[in-house]
Image 1 (cartoon, rainbow, N blue to C red):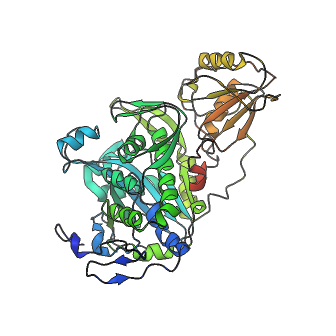
Image 2: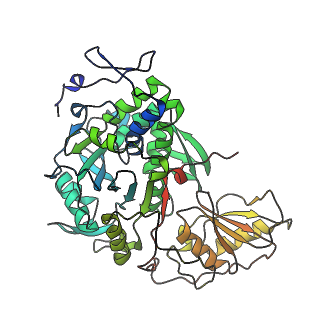
Image 3: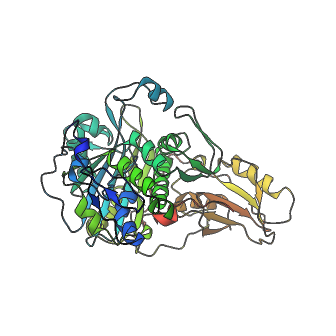
Length: 484
């Protein structure tokens, strides 16, 4: 890997009128034969190139373009199943004071971990599973005792981060990718921004982010704030959901005709991605991009670590997250065995009974209320009752297009089953129904159910069953759909 001042020695990506790529030497490299071929080769750049989460944009790259980092990985990455640890670092030393003020980052020097993810590639490199590790996970840091998992990087840099994740998950890490999260701004702007949707308003003075609930087009600085903010009820867990949404949005944008058919935008995206990453082993990732040529949006799947307690009080008085040990162990066992999480053990039919297991307390759940009848004021009464039961109900109740709902329905997004079960426990008799929405909606029917006040529990996060199937969703399912 070339050192400072050697950047010009690598390949410079630039477009011409014919869509070709011109090298620094002036020679012209032939473009891929078709848009389909370019789409396949760009997938790894798009899927794993959000600066918050991952970046392996390697389309026309050489090893000299991608910086190396010593993460203590001594073996070459395998060509079969592979586990990649992605660490997003927040490095501010090279920012001007004006940039620090603009990005609401403060003036602290040094590096700190902002995101940790394990990315598993199947043996045939046709499936990608992404597991976000909550940064507040309370675990054993080798040689340092019990700490939050994100402290491993501060204690011992990339090598200790790798050891801590291997110990916590039981997975062998074959490749390490480090991303400077501040480079995320350039990646997003190179694509012309991204589309996101938030089910709740976000007002975070720390990041300068102020969004109403709904769909938004965000430029780089705003997108960074959206991916980093913890100013919602579930804090870091909500942030993980937003980061996964941003990955999917960037992947979708990178693979769109507007990017693939625009040489200047494509070049800007690839070059900005390459500038944000460091890797170990330092092999340029060209072979990996070739191996993943058949991966599609539907083949990138996100999974969550099962949690036992989302508000664990540490001996130092901090709030941390505890994994549900048996369920987490089973999740990582299945990943290590290269099992397809898209084909899990059949889920039990969700129960709307008050006795249904709930793992998320009401005060951490945001609900949208819709009146599905012609009964005036039913939505407002339901909102009041839900708030009295402890739920968050932002905004005014809405109305469905059809007014003939006989039974109350709780609609929930693919990653919101646990929260939906808590809502169902408060609305006996309601039907649970998965839908392509980002949060939870309660459609009130003519049955006009009574809203129960849930009894507070001594443990705010009861342990889920260790045999529970992990919640997963694909990048396609995670894309924010614009409302008509």
